[in-house]
Length: 218
Image 1 (cartoon, rainbow, N blue to C red):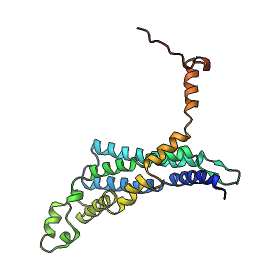
Image 2 (image 1 turned 120 degrees about the horizontal axis):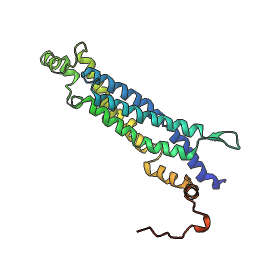
Image 3 (image 1 turned 90 degrees about the vertical axis):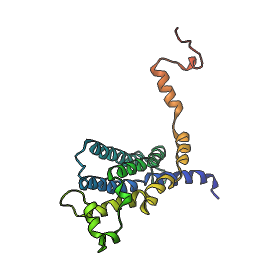
Image 4 (image 1 turned 90 degrees about the horizontal axis):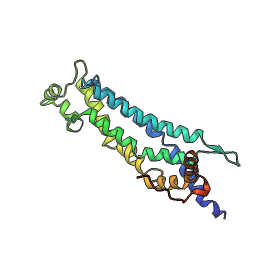
């Protein structure tokens, strides 16, 4: 009958769950690797804009990893002896998870090119009638089998549009609470008054002068 702890229990569970979204970082690692691979297979890996997109993907993904590490390392020991993650940082981390994988996926699709969604099927590749044409017109750089190029394109398609996108993208959005749930918690947990005090102290505003309006100079 300790119902007074029900709200706290939900909030703490949600914080643990939101911290655990490092799993999306691992999926993004695979997608980044696939993007670099298809760039090489397409013969575009040395292009400056491709390099920049790969850097952007890594920056976003490592930022997610920083978030899950930060809310764990900034956690504290509870009186019971267990450790609880920092709830504010956990919610900030999960808020980033609702955004960054979508941008990483967009960049992956950009790098892959339109062939990702117009690619002939494996049946076409194996077909005695049209297989030779698939081999001819789906070839990338010299020395890379057409089948290898098709396989890596299918992986990118699956992670960003196919069945795996359910777990990588949609679950990033709504798992452990939809985006607004994290924003509500961030609003509750952030200490705005403390930030205001710091700002006022730096510009010489005393507590007694708060509320006094200062006219701007003409």
